[in-house]
Length: 317
Image 1 (cartoon, one colour):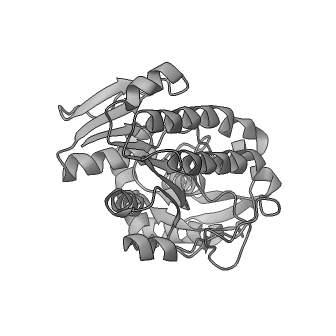
Image 2 (cartoon, rainbow, N blue to C red; image 1 turned 90 degrees about the vertical axis):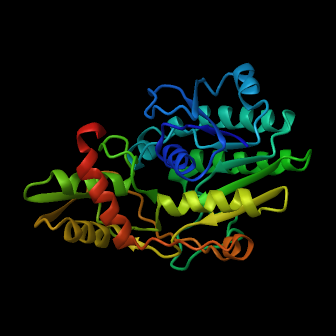
């Protein structure tokens, strides 16, 4: 098959790219824009493309069997609060163009990575249908959540017009190798890893650390994508993908410190932005349709990430 990976130098795209290089003999087309190519391999055809350009996107998806749309403008909670517009316009444009071109070029299957920002805070894991767009979206996530919803609906719309399959994956917080680890752009997991590994005596937690997150190791997301491509029968599916349970930031910080074998004190900076929500996702639908379950425990995922960070930290920043 001809497989196109958009955002192949990013976190999720890079991990999917490495999976295909290890496991299959398909023709891999890898798209990058601002970043330089990371992997030199004769099996990869690298394509530099601005995904906001309709003509370029139309050429890009032509003759492709699978399009994995992992390109996105992403940052952490600081931007979600202080400049939320950075998550909206470019993402809306590039996804609209990619979905349309997949339909017009008769691509067999298009994979879109949504997220769980639209879900309300909950103490029990939420199913895909446990969502009311008129009531549940937190105001702090208004822009990015509604952009993701729009993209999900565009997947469903184009799936009804032709033969192209579309999948919208509402994944929880993903972590692991090639994540963002710099403190300006990273999500909570990557930021915490860097804080712990660079600290000498103490680590600072933003806010009170009481919010809870569902954390999934990236290899489990990759296996999810592979099963979607192999097993999805309907032209459109909206699927949760997560560990299925949450952990507080306080407990996460303590766990990372313990597994790093460092002795650090914890202090709290209440002036820094944080979003005090509780969230985990119910993945029964994915288990039923795909036979998927996460295989990596949080402890195991942290150990793997710490090992990767230690080996690669000179190249991270």
